[in-house]
Image 1: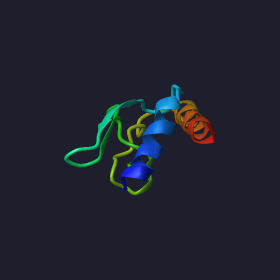
Image 2: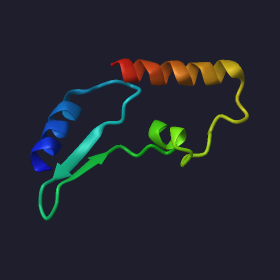
Image 3: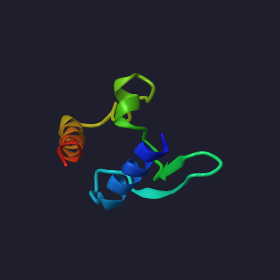
Length: 77
């Protein structure tokens, strides 16, 4: 677990993109914990799994499209 986690830390520390959360730090003892920037509107994973309420309910279609385009750009990165 720690080796895979260190790989995640190494990759995450090199990623810089406005649509990705930033790695803030990590610890290895007493257990391996990785700390990322807080996502106050929830994650894409939570949204797709129904755990995060849709934040754009009252937005115009162009705002929704822009949000989806930014998400796709981050995933492509």
